[in-house]
Image (cartoon, rainbow, N blue to C red; front, side, top):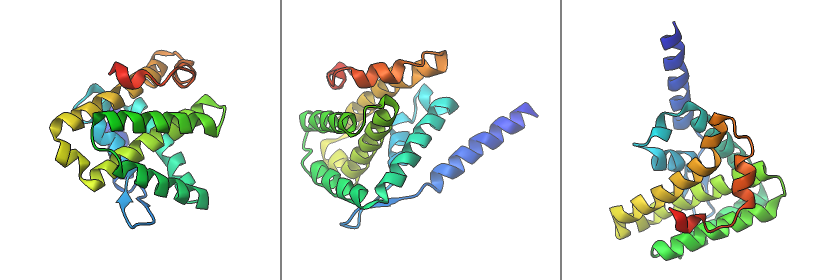
Length: 182
């Protein structure tokens, strides 16, 4: 019976991902930031971690709601413009730094900041994928983005599963040099 519930829960999460609302930019690009984050986690232990997946989905849902507002559409347009400027690992790091700084300016609540940051990061990855940057720069660039995403998740979310509730606060109050630590 326990196996049934685990399987049911996992199928429900997968169905939710497939049904996740797609964000449409003003230029017509359709993206799924939750799917982009999940793509980064594929093939890792985090992919099977249901707690981490639930946290990421909750953050993605919050970002989805924000994207429906007029201000959210301005944000999408600006992120789309930023994504077109990414030509190499250095410009991707700079874009991640900008996302981190922007999230920190929006509010003082570290959990909301982190939610915005994860949403912006997922959006950036999705937009880069739409523009074909990953194809042009190759598998090494995809691995590079994955390593940064994994560092973010492991630094901020994974300690929560071990009872360290301040991990998000610590991450968001830290410096943006995490982009160079991967």
